[in-house]
Length: 401
Image (cartoon, rainbow, N blue to C red; front, side):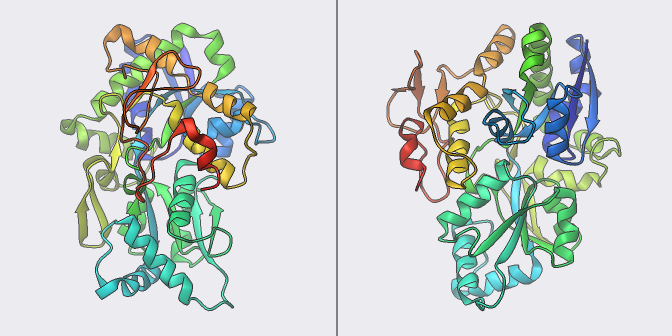
């Protein structure tokens, strides 16, 4: 059976590309027709009109679609998380130098989001009022990086729209925009941070893994209509992507994976730019590297499980940003978008690791999710750099914090 899926040129498209290239999809009786796109809006709209069956998507995009935030909003389901973290905040060399000067004793920031945020706050406070706010780019308004950037800025005491403007710009254009001075920084998935560093115009300030440990980045978003009409194909696709992710997560395959991703029909950039995400050796500036465990996770135990608690965190940030108004109906829409039942149905027969319970979040003891018959167990996956812990059972408390 042919399945048509879109993708964007990011390292986190690895599982999809490898499922096609290494035969994991064929083993499940699927022919994947992969369509490279240039914007998330194109992917969203092509799914809406039936030209694509689905695609790797920023984790909040299916939520926004089901909340009706687009002129043409496709009905989407999330069946799998494709990667955790994998993004970074990159700034211009000039801004990086100012941030270093703002540090006590000029200590290096070294990817610490707390130190980076306070340095940025100090720089903003000294900025003449006559100047426009600093401008940071994100790849899409409803993206993982977008909401993590906003969270980091807010937790650092900075106000989006007053101290820092956040604008949408396709990630492949961000290095040139930084070079031209059109933006002061950006938050994007790899390899575009490493691209800016390699060209000498950017410096990596901190990473999404440091802002939200194990936060989801891309998910498998599928047309609800296609899922309902193709139950067996959905299961086959999830099994293929699971096995592909296992291959991608094997350190022995890193160089081959980087080479495949570098092909013109895939990402079309130097294979060496894939290595930071795949190895955790992050080049912050030319000649300056730092190892970061979990910089990007393509496969680790239950990392593929689509967690409703994480969907609710994104929803809370959408409310805080003024992108949507909170209501019980909207909360229900968000929870129903993340379909862990599809993941379990497809992967239990092949003995893939599964959470024992319905959902996972950081908490003390075993708690129950509202409306669920199974308990929630403790996890670190909702802990943030500022020490905050997201509790989906107390959603309203997070909407204005």
